[in-house]
Image (cartoon, rainbow, N blue to C red; front, top):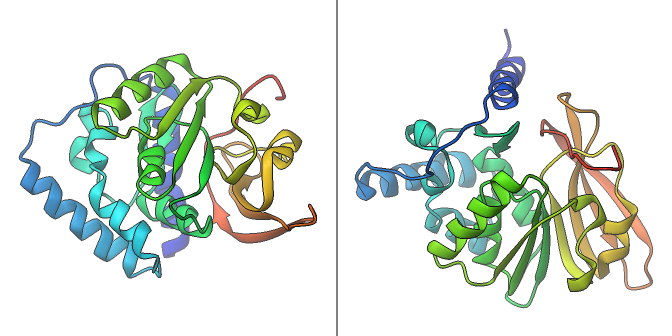
Length: 245
């Protein structure tokens, strides 16, 4: 079995576990924080920097945010592994490299207002909050949205707004956005998100069928409002859900 298909097989197993396991209980770690700091440093050096992520703000955020605080207790020791992990209710926390790569692609700065579709446990939102001015994040599953909001507040990510709703339709009250990141695979690029993307803005979104290999797409809107798209890589995400499906 070559390396590519081995990675895909491992990812498929993770998604299968996520789909059948509604993980409950507290998201917390009991181990020594120094150990997690060392593990996080290793994650950033081996999984992020060596694979080509160069943006200093992204690297700093990945080094700072305690990923182990965003996974269920039973998965804490794997928090810094090179893999997505189940967080319950059919959802996952994305592979660290994918989080860093998608964040870097957005070209954020300290004035950016960002929309995230698919809060999950709140990890991606925490990473974004370390770079952007404000992060608005939407989660369709109430059992994930409420704990994520509490977790982000407890960890003092003050520039993050969390709501429970259908991310396909975005968050028009806070639009337009400098950047949009979608962390679940859609069958197509949602028109409401295109409308809410600011001129000169970027969106990164996985597009493709559920539980299949999808395409990670970069969407750019120029100052005249013209939309262009570019295929970045093959990925595997849980499906975007909601009334549109």
